[in-house]
Length: 142
Image (cartoon, rainbow, N blue to C red; front, top):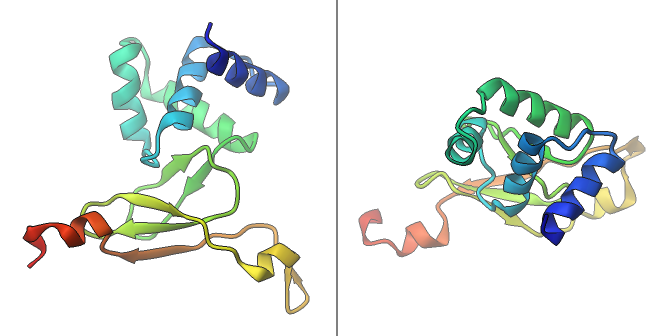
């Protein structure tokens, strides 16, 4: 087992998750992916490596990883729910043309303080919609 996979195995065990081969491979994919994949994308990737894997296994693993705080769901209106292993607070940019979701490192002073106008903040969800740099450079945009 390589060092990276061993580290992911230790993370799962620390959260009291039995590190089955399927769970490890799903967790590894989410750590490597910058695509913010949907369940369908995860399944399509995993079935190439583990032909016997089921969507139920994907859903169960995703739900467990979310429950234990190891991944977060991204629910942007008019977009399928996506998942990512970057659990730090950050914003996202959704390209309306290609559908790509890009992480944005934007600091929010209210979240840093964990309160706004006397209200305690527990979560931060921020996103922008528009057209990404790559699509803007495309000649098809005209």
